[in-house]
Amino acid sequence: MSGQIPKRIIQFRIGAQVTQTLRTRAVMSSMTLWNPDYEYLFFSDGQVKELIDRDFPEYKSVFYSFPLTIQKCDFFRYLAIYRYGGFYFDSDVLLASNLSVLLDYGCIFPFEAITLSHHMRDNLQMDWQIGNYAFGATAGHPFLKAIIENCVRGQKDRNWVKPMMRGCPPFLNDQFFIINSTGPGLVSRTLGESRELAKTVTILFPDDICDRRNWNHFGEFGVHLMDSSWRVGRSFLRRKFTGYWWSRIERKRVQQSQKLGKARDYPCKHTSVNGQIPKACKA
Image (cartoon, rainbow, N blue to C red; front, side, top):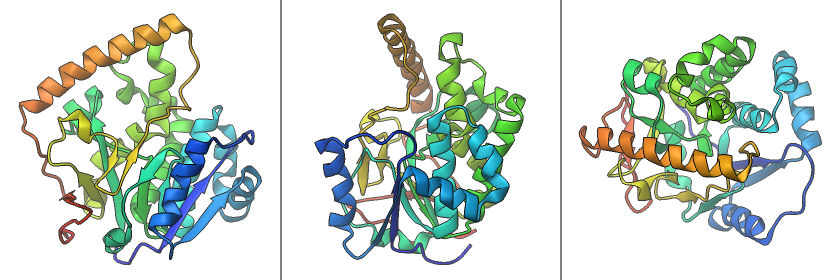
């Protein structure tokens, strides 16, 4: 799909209205400070529901059927960018550069981290995943449409999500299901299973995907601070055990990925250097 991403930044809040911390206000201010000529749209809880009722009646029942707020948040970010076009950012993404160099790329997502998913590694030959904490696209982009349809599919058929859950320990089922039913796992799976659509997507890869210091960056344009406010509450003991398991399996996966080298070849691979990326590849 051709076309330029509009100069628009979209953020929102779903659920109870809470007082924003100074850190959150500072982070969100970086959006307009670096991009003063961009339209900034912020949707309140009521405006989120109004947009869905007005522009996406076909997805209304699905949206309200998600049991968790984070799933509604995931779903809405795709709908909002699909409807208006522009850039979406979580409220814990801090920008460090103007975004205008990205406008000509049509659809752009960040590399997030090495994936722990067996399905991604074994069946899709992807040992990495992309993030949904920040992305940009033209209105009506077909890759976003595919993501939206997969969210609907996962909500209506939980068995469709099961391949992405393989190897997940029982005590993390809740978190892994969120990641793989509406979150970055689903977005990455959509990319891996839609190779033609993947040719229309630009991915901001770092020079070395195995270096953890490069994870959760929106290229050279910003950083995801990883507040993880969405994670399901659990006891101190479970949090400690989860952290231990996650660190152990992550080290193992990184070691496996290091054998494949630092960089990855993909239909639309781009490495950003000092906020600049080379001319977009075309299929």
